[in-house]
Length: 305
Length: 208
Image (cartoon, rainbow over all chains, first blue to last red; front, side, top):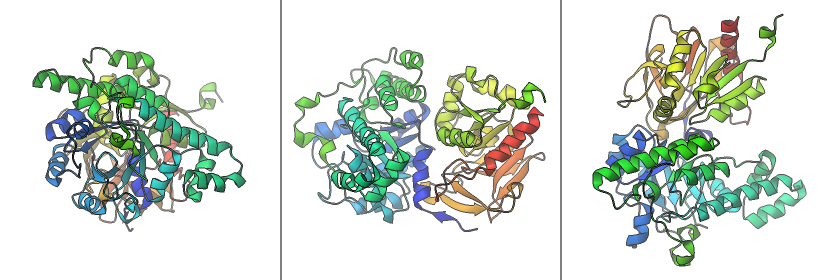
């Protein structure tokens, strides 16, 4: 009987299998192996983690396909990669080299200031960032198979991740209690497709998996996001930007231990004694940025329309 | 009728990582008590366990870290019913073609599994499967970076194959394995409960 690839259901079921897990940013084969060994469910292959993109400035683009292919060959877990917002050619390249999921990401410099990629045209699933329910439903309307609340990438500060996840969850809770006749006006307020608004009002959840991203640096941060309703966690700079004062060998060990601790905190987020246990002796986390010190023009979460 | 036969079935779902909630939902629909298993103490008083879809590497490592591998292996040797879906099937296999060095397995079914048989997510697919054990109607199956069964021991029954003969569902006595995900919601929003009912019949037959 006929096999159908790239259907909405096939794309939406991919992140279902990542739930309760950690997706880890990596910039080379060695980091990818550390992440896999620590129990990560997938890796995001990048040339620079967000903290470095922030520090170095300049235009941030899709990574060299060669790097992504090397990482794909080094691990058996899924490999994701980022394209710029609206850059459908970068997305086509990532699909052509066989990445398992494309992140149309505000962490890179946007290629289009008005329009996102038409993700329905791809057979590979997309994950997109969102700061609130309206943004999440616009991305799903464009074909995103997975959402991640944005947080503020590369900040090491969980405050924006909390703000965005709470905004999405509050938006869902609000739809649950609105009478049917108010849903059209609410769709207009949210700037979201009416049919998706009705679906969320009926089911009380997003039609796709929702992870938390942007600012997670400790097992406690990861467990916090799970407690607030995230179905899994992206960890970017939080792992490989920790323990920067250590020697290379010590860093490798510290990164592995931190990644493993965050994986365990996501699995056992309801069991605070385990979260407490895995939080011990992890060494120095990444330094982090206070967001009131970050000018609006440098806040990545503001990118996306 | 004795109390034991009237007692509601208690089925564990390994809840370390993956789509364990979808299985718990199916069990709820079937009026069975589903227990999320994260620690060895959650294994007490279960009638069977489901190993869900997810990343077999991540699940395997967490299974060892929290001391679940050995008790599960002992229970399986004593006839405890287990069903693995996708990643769970890999964990049940006695051999895999390309498991990472150090990938922990339960190694309980006499099968060799090939991971990511069909390629990356781009090659993931849905299809109608003929599964005679479930009756005539086809079972609509989702293969998400799925494995396949390359070799089966003499005691293993193939329950379903793709058109090219690739084995994708197997049973060996009280052990059941599927390379796809009967737990996920179908395109029409409905759930096809037949594979879960089939597993519960195995559980009932073991409990007697």
